[in-house]
Image 1 (cartoon, helix red, strand yellow):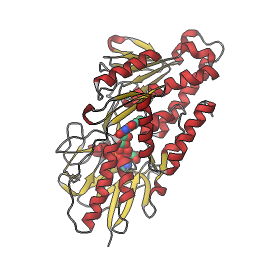
Image 2: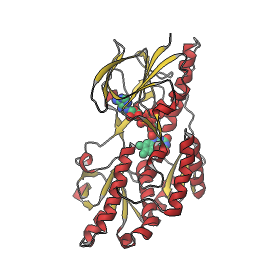
Image 3: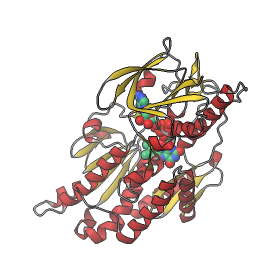
Image 4: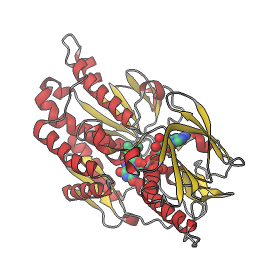
Length: 410
Ligand SMILES: Cc1cc2nc3c(=O)[nH]c(=O)nc-3n(C[C@H](O)[C@H](O)[C@H](O)COP(=O)(O)OP(=O)(O)OC[C@H]3O[C@@H](n4cnc5c(N)ncnc54)[C@H](O)[C@@H]3O)c2cc1C
């Protein structure tokens, strides 16, 4: 008898778990509104066309044959009856999906901090559809700003792009956008060159606060040299259709606002009866079992071991997914399981114009510049799981380098 393993989510944690789970021992069903795995570290590159959208996704149906998948969201869990209430993504039909073991790998959502206007006028970057909306808006603004009869003031507004949040997402978006505007604009939109501006706003005093001070200063210098403006120590109070409002009521006109100010808990996790930490993440034993629910496991951004909080990173979710698959395989064979231990693989971030910053655990071995960029590319390439993506990414980059990024609107 194979036990029914129900996995919620198709992100980093679920993807790695699926890859390693023994299907002779488990009857696996996956529920997620997203029918593909998304390689988020390259998501900012798709917003400007350095890498194409479909290059960084992998269909869930091709990841592992013999697994059942339903495109739906889990809306509640009944631990007594061991069922998950599911709702189809398009049809909105609802049903109860039974399980013997449940895996929660639903990630987190963008945090708007309740700032007015973010949902109506801001752009977030979490899914591929978000990246497509951003790319569409960038091109739309380029075309609108090129029309005759547009005042210089309006042209400058349309060409001002603001990223709220100086963490990895905001910095990488600003870097990619600046690459596009500095390289491709000269050829395709030379009349807009003098109007373009990119600004990063953050409540903190520096960019990439999780990095070593030397690297933070480096990023700030790089941005300064390239004309990417940084507004430190500023809160965004409101996002409007044509501006953002900063502390003290200062209005900054702009043509697009990327909201990358942080993550909030997934509503499904919020609804569960088990204990959470202050950030709303489920508290886990070292075996990744949810405390008080021995047949429920959780991993990735939506949970953290009680013994020591872990960062919300792809490498954590991926390692947990692999660990959990091996543990469950051992468990089914009647063997004892060892606790999960995270191996910190360091962090790196692209900062634009062929430069990156990288460091190992505890800020060791900091490096910056083109060598760090090569390291960043190699690390990302080797982290990719499908050979399709490994092949397509260098081809996309080559196409962008030879022919420029595609700025067609359709
Ligand atoms: C733009 C961007 C860039 C990033 N870059 C990096 C990087 O360079 N390095 C790094 O380490 N980390 C990076 N991260 C963070 C990394 O993506 C996350 O830490 C990682 O994806 C977490 O994996 P996860 O499996 O917990 O959740 P996710 O990968 O977020 O997956 C969650 C899954 O759950 C599904 N889901 C949500 N709600 C439900 C529900 N109710 N029912 C069923 N399914 C549901 C979602 O559709 C999704 O499939 C980046 C994140 C972003 C947004």
